[in-house]
Image 1 (cartoon, rainbow, N blue to C red):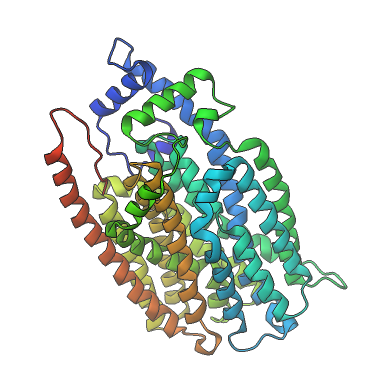
Image 2 (image 1 turned 90 degrees about the vertical axis):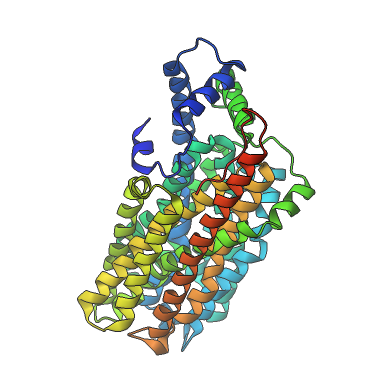
Length: 482
């Protein structure tokens, strides 16, 4: 087991006996004399290859994705609103329109990805949103900003859900949640990097290009350059992966067929998709994801403004906005160990949302600067910890078919992004500096998220008992991991 498995192993519930059987059968179809050590070595080699190519590139591009999306929050505190003549809730409208554009095509994106292929679709999306991000740096009116935010949302939709889907194609079930957690680590890292970076960019003085314009232009150009590499790095699924040798492709094909998750080559059937969409448990699970993304959005988009309203300068607010995200990044690194201590995803997730709940209560209760900074850090810690748990849990618990993985990954991102509708309209300028409405709404959403975790746990326990009762002899059946 490599270091990433040790730090972020947040979902492995496959026993050693079952794991050994899977690897033996994956290689040879029956249990034979091949040593466990050789099987482990082959799986470890395969995962390292995918980590270095698919996962590493996806994480880097996701950092740029999150940075481009949240750059409007930094631009706001360095003159965006004044230069574009924005008043009252115009900024919130711009933030909402991004979500409108994002959700307009999001749910269908994974079906397009299955048809077009990840190696072509995802780099193209990166180039598109990079261009749109850069174009935000040349706008002169708020109407143009509104149009750019809609286009940015439309061009970004499909990226995160697409990455989640291809990760489910490449990784075995007991390795998947770990890698999804590593992928989502890019979200707080983006905030940690973009805060000081944007602060430095905003100090550039130019006779015609304003500080907030530099933020958009340079971040967009960097994204386009990195996205072009995706045409040479990303692969559609392991069965046709160019950087794997024949033995590795056959190994993972047999392995995933044995565990019932396949590898991405299976065709989508409309009947299977509608069957998954009709499962109420899938929808309930998304409540926790919605809550975690609401908390993360509070930190990503509105942290600079929240800190600025506490009396800090714009430059100080940009730099300090990295603090809550740094806490979140640390939490995501150690969340795997915490899940193992809790013994389950649902209990660890409940604790993460409870941490956000405490932070929101602290921020709504007082204007004391140190207390509110601590509350914001708790929000970042719990929110990003939840982001390291819930998406991976959603995909792993619904990996019994390509249809289930496609729907689960799509709904995970759809519900997570839907939180932007609420977020963009509860942290309003007229409510500064306390932002009581926004924090109160967050409190209510965290309670709903915790309830979602508890209901899902009860439902999965009951379903697993029924599945075990209906199996024949030693037949292996799919089990929901909670």
